[in-house]
Amino acid sequence: MNKISTQNMSFVDEHGRERIFRGINLVDKKPHMGKKVTFKYPVDDAYLRRCQSLGFNLIRLGVLWEVLEPRPGQYNEKFIGELSEIIDRCGKYGIYVFLDIHQDVYSEFANLGGTGAPEWATLTDGHKVKNTRFVWSEGYYFRRAVWAAFNNFWNNAPVEGKGLQDWYADMLRHLAARFRDKPAFFGYDIMNEPFGDKRCGYTIKKLVASVVKVVLTDKRVKIGNILRCAKKGRIFDAFSGDVVLKATAACEPAVREFENKYYTPFLNKMTVAIREIDPVHTVFSAHSYWTNAGVPCSAGPIAPGGKREKNQCFTPHAYDFTVDTPAYEFANNDIVRGLFAGQRQAQERLNVPVVVGEWGGGGDGVNWYPHISYLLDLFEKYKWSNTYYFYLEDAEEMAYRNKKDVGKIDLFEIPLADTVLNRPFPMAVCGEIDGYHYDEAGRTFTLQYTQTEPCAEPTEVFLPSEPLDITVSGGEYELTPYGGAYCLKWRTGPGSHSLIVRI
Image (cartoon, rainbow, N blue to C red):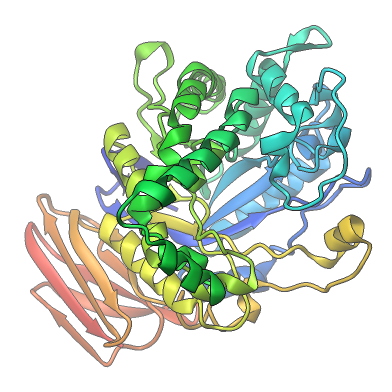
């Protein structure tokens, strides 16, 4: 496995090749239930061979703080050992792993309705909550107990004589000591979709008011069109991505205050802790939960003590608002384009590479597949690495939550994996990528790059099937087997290079 570092807005390896990563989320959000001992997904050789056959060379491995550290300073070594084995196994197939410390609505404890923090770290200041009634995320908007739990975390409230963030930092140090020497280990996604306190929660009122104002005053929005789209079950078709961004901008002041006052200092503090143990692997800067809806990200860059962290990246998330529902077949490309355009602006401000940590999702049928193709084209344009998130709860979790068994569905069990996701891309390029694209209709892949120095290793392009035709601007290439697919290895020297492959 090559050592990966960052250089401006690109990932590079020790040979100077620009790297692109594609992969999948494996996020274990199963509730604790007092008996957590193993990772939910069977990340065995058969699973990883399947990943490799699709060109997946990166896994976002999501775990919960409550599972890692069920008591203060007491770590679940059996579970951490299993994670270590998973990382090593991934390395056998050329697949990198970054660790996502996952949370949603802070915790499952105190009836918050989420996942993440252990019971001992869930301080709600006596506020009580009722069961979730509508959507999993409602606690962000309405629950004082959720706001109190986050507020205590961001203010480093003490537990057993040590602040919550200090315990969190110790946990990251412990993980760094276990994973820092593993060739397949990529880095640390320090916290999934962080949320502020009650001010961020109250922004839902501002958002509703802003939406009403935009609907009534923006000339791009037509009431008649809204009614027609709503009648068809496609209300979001009445809005463009730019209109959505205008409406969500009302939330920006509260989110900016949170990310600048609490979240960026938290990232700096956690990075210091990690760097005490692991000086190399990439640290990930995420964004507030609200940025999923288009609120601008103000976090970062990571710069402890004013000194910019060398190996850092940005990991944005965004979905169409109908994701994981039957209406996903009507996913609105322009809305998600607008969401990711905002993320692109954040990347340029931060001047770091991107791994889109969560995107995609699922729905019924296949009519939403063109939406996924659209997003892949967008990621190609931005040269963004990404990890697809296909989350449908497994039988045990659904039985626990809803008292019924719905079975298990996996990304690999639907046609999307072998069709839309299974496309060529440049895994390693000897120089700077000027552009690349896969024309799905014409089944043609193109790549252009500029090489300034000799490179001991070849440019490597993943090809899902044996090509019909290959056209290169010079140099020598060969096709080698790659987990049931192919890898085109192309040796070039300094200069401008282009590649065309028909498959």
